[in-house]
Amino acid sequence: MKINEGFELREICGEAVIVAHGRKNIDFSKIISLNESAAYLWRNVVDKEFDAPMLAHLLTEEYEVDEATALRDAEKVMQEWQEAGLAR
Image (tube, rainbow, N blue to C red; front, side):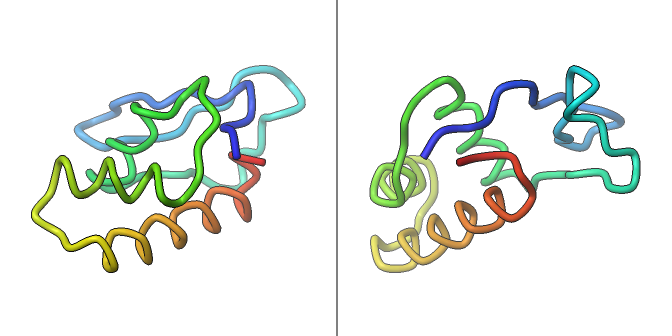
């Protein structure tokens, strides 16, 4: 999987928010915000190919979480990013 072009993570009023660039990506009907761990993952995989095990590894390196929980969380994040059109 890879993050789609035209999206950037920004800090706005203390919140991690995904900003779309270019006309084809603009959808003012929704704002996509990321929690701390999702923003951490985004920063570490932008412009890279990634999969759930890679995201899980990043989570276990940064947070006190076991591998099974990290893998479930990684799969959920990937699904949410796909559904929001942020990654393919």
